[in-house]
Length: 503
Image 1 (cartoon, rainbow, N blue to C red):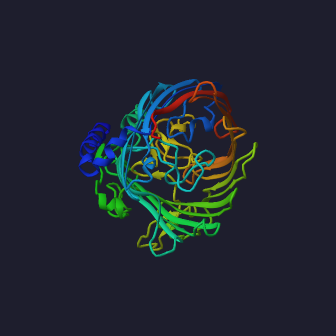
Image 2: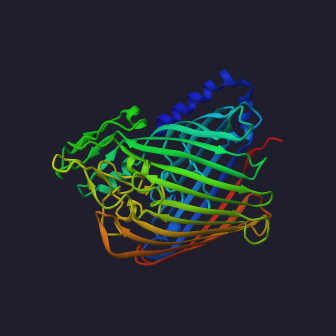
Image 3: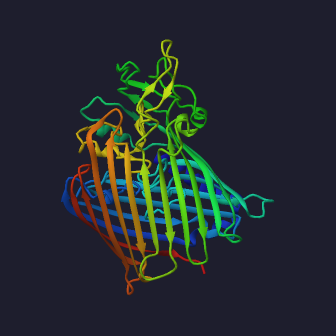
């Protein structure tokens, strides 16, 4: 897949001058580079939670690890005053004690005409309407796993609808891609006969609306829908509706239309058909008050696996992420505070029952968040694609379920606080603290609630005498019955700058 993306990018680079000759000479300007070295050391039952998670799949999975990373990029946003905007990037990482010893983390090309962008390749993207440094991340598409290579048509920023006097704007995207975790899934399943997939495909789409204009009045409302799907490829060791294993290797539906509009059925659905593929989604809502020097925003992210929660059949308010973000006037102490409550205890209730002749009443409960009977988990390379407080499959070995690809700990009640500050232009810091209570899942409940306390303390300093050089030090701590104890330190040295900066 990476080879095909590289070829596609090369062809696009060759064809670009046909339509944007005047822009091509700017491609060598405003190009950034960066190099970083990261080391971790410590002990305990696991790596500190916030060392591992929400780092786009590059967090350490062993207590003692090392990572070297290098990138080069040009942001499309650089060409703000141009109709054509061009961006590109390449980002590689290598080391030990991580999920991958070597990986191409990012490789992308962005071509934008006014507000419409075509993005090709593998690119890190932040969660919608959340603070990337302080939030636990989105439920459907967060920042927890490595990015999936895709072709994506998007409006990356809100576009003001003509005739609305700047009071109504929209943004959104449509994307198709391919998973790159074949090797990880094979290695994870080695020595077992658990289900896994190969060469599966990815689809996502979103539409968001904004009401209000902070330049005219400080109150704005953002609202919209985000959906995603894993589909296609080949399934191994799948189990049928009656609990019996079917053929060892099964071809799965590669229907792009049914991924876009959920339909069809999976090969092991038998009498009771579900839509083909692993479909997930979120409703998003955010309300902001933006003053001259400060702002406050409240937001929610309501996750759903099927129509029962998508259309609030069993109560909209029972499972969601609720958040509050405050940005303070400039000061030497605290710049931003985020608080979030994450609740997934209900999941429409514990009982699922298909309609039968004897009992025609369908009960579409036991949503089993992030789980799927074909693809195992809403994950990529061992990390859940959404919020990491629903523990990723990579933790299953520690929890006594080696080789299993499901999410056995998805009933969560958690409180999270994130705080950051900038005492000076060169010094910054942040603190993350999360308290989580977990009941396992309806199908695999725990006898007593498992509890986890996850702490991150981090500070970064930009050296004055060596331009572009910065040093970051962090301490991570786990405590409780969920993931055990851990105490580790992390040191990161990075150097970035411009290859060529326009005037």
